[in-house]
Image (tube, rainbow, N blue to C red; front, top):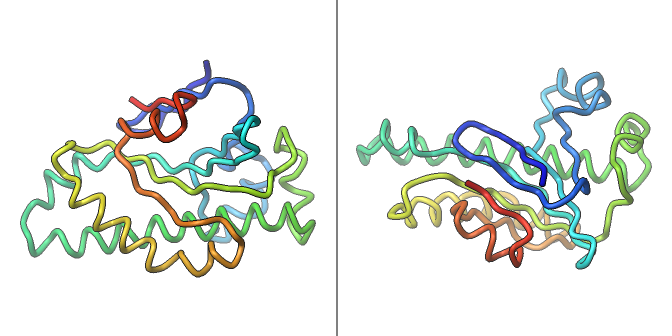
Length: 177
């Protein structure tokens, strides 16, 4: 079992079929300084030939600090924009590898498998389970900004889920705590 730790969330992966742009020398050297954002981890489900592109978020502090209604809306927009930037960056990075364009030579050697055609973008959140409305609101905001882009690539819609739902969604293959 392999683990990816981000503040407030630990993701457990069943095998070595993953990569992280942030630890890629190609990303660090050629993209990070240009403001290209990335998502936390990409994991390949070999059985389904599906690449999960995952962002891990801890929003417990956000909820505690911004529980007042007037602050909540601006906080949702800020967090939603951050997620949209990460999705667009990850999509651009993956596309450059798939199309063998520009920076693909900087990244393709660091990805331990061929990229499958199917991809699923997930935002896995640690927050109080009673905040389903928060997750739905952020998901709606993110989908409004990314659905057309992901549809053009035939990737489906982004899902924003509580960390406890990840195991069920991946049929027990991925676990977040």
